[in-house]
Length: 132
Image (cartoon, rainbow, N blue to C red; front, side):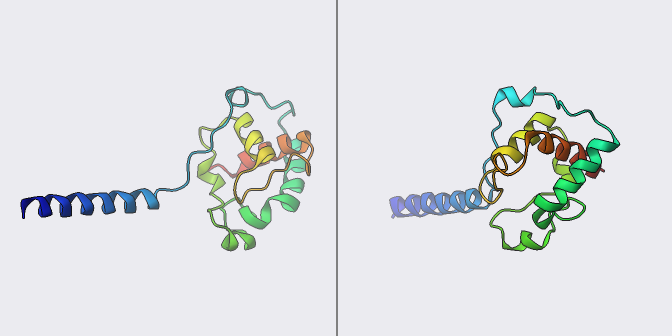
């Protein structure tokens, strides 16, 4: 009888642990070390932000929304949240944002063959304008 209770407790704990793990958001987005220290070669300023905004409008806005809140019209069809750039970018280096935009992951498409590196760097400057 005691062994049945122990087995029941073990199964209950295992099921609870599995349930918790299944609700944890996706794995962290691993960025190669060299990108974490990479500097943005596009000079910051109004021109870069304007260019970044134009490219963002045609490549990013449909999922990430006009203000980067992750509320674009396509966001509802995604398996993973688009994220809120007003808070999610804090602590991320420009090189990390460049890498994520260039390579993509899951619902986030890779833009390495669709957008020039210079345009991606300009988008990074524009993304910084969303920070609260």
